[in-house]
Amino acid sequence: MPAVSFKNDPIVRCKECRAYINPFVRWIEKGAMWICPFCGEINPTDSYYYSTIEADGYRTDHDERPEFSCGTVDFIANHEYMNRPPMPPTYLFAFDVSKPAVDSGYLALACSTIKSVIENQLLPGMSDERAKVAFITYDKHIQFYNLRPILKQPQMMVVTDTDPVFMPQPEDLLVNLQDSFDLVINLLDNMPNYFAKATGQDSCFVAALQCANNIIKQIGGKMVFFQVSPMILRHPKLQPAATTTT
Image (tube, rainbow, N blue to C red; front, top):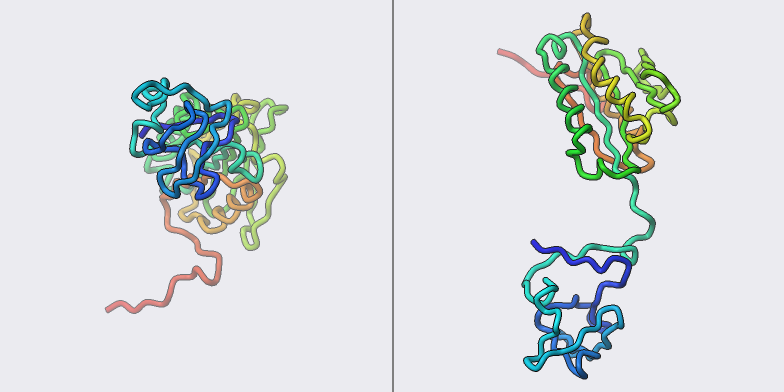
């Protein structure tokens, strides 16, 4: 679908019914005015959008603008549609590192895949200089990672009490991807080695989910979980119902 961008200028719309500029408007006064096909309102043409009109009634830039020749287009929203500047693209990756997860070989594959995704900027917004990332791992405990760019290597912090969830150094868990790029790659390269001798069979998925939400809740973002083992359900509302077997 073609996209139409007005950059920093207001998107052209009818001042009466707010219909967007479209192929069915009629140009009058040599292009200085246009008539809305929906409500009939006569609208002035702003200087940044003005173009001369040819003998057939079309603008000279008709073929260059999708909004004049296509029935459907995407108008790119600009600042007039925003209450605040857009938040930075944010991704949190959470890995199950229990023994079944490690033994299955998934952890090494997941880490190498996410590393490739980051290096090749395959996720939306990852090329943005403001992009942020965070990582957590979890088995019956939760491991957080300080990736501040002043460090020489990632710093692991282990939280053994997950009810209630405790957040160590919350200001250091979400970092700018460009600033901490080397630390992020270092972490993904070495994470399978950190848990190569894992012995725990369970994973506290719900507690990890709460932690992930706490990390990015101020700005929002996307949480990507890799879950393999049976979950330890900490929250009373999430406990499994009693079952009867026959």
